Image 1 (cartoon, each protein chain N blue to C red):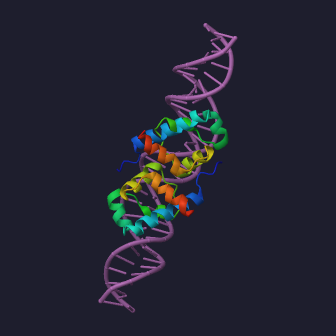
Image 2: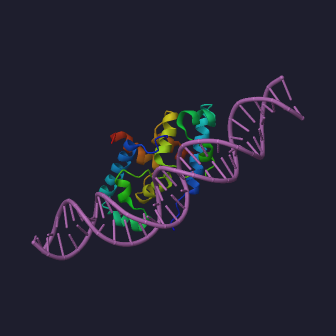
Image 3: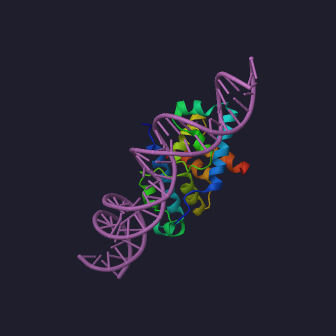
Length: 77
Length: 77
DNA sequence: CCCTGAAATGACATATACGTAATATTACGG
DNA sequence: CCGTAATATTACGTATATGTCATTTCAGGG
């Protein structure tokens, strides 16, 4: 009934994470071994991840959730 | 295997939303009729909501996701 | 006391995130 | 061209968020 996923938001989140990985030269596999998160699925933009999962990702990159979204909003990705 | 939910984060999110509702004098039912989200469950702190759902909540209160988390982090709720 | 609105809690079905694994595709260095 | 690393994509089972509804608890006003 209600729209569960927000495609635009998911694309923005995917892009933000890709950028974080690129900046930190982290492969999907490296991130997976530390967090057990299959980031490829998230980066596909088709997965509506939970806040706990996103928090784990932010912890890995040593940024806060507010920082994650602040830059996402700034860039209007 | 991996811990999916982050109980502390979920409690913080719950508290942040309760506060938003109180500040704006919004009942659970009012929010439900606009967003179709049963916020009571979220405020119980047992639900690991998705980013799209949280985004809908933020939209309702007319704040950004970064603002949502910024205050959450400030208050160390 | 009641009554009412609000919140909290529970149950159940469905959709989907997540855990796990495999395969395919792409990009690059040799 | 080949081999390798990285990414992208797919599939499947399980756990759980979400949709829907009902019940219970609670606080305040009459």
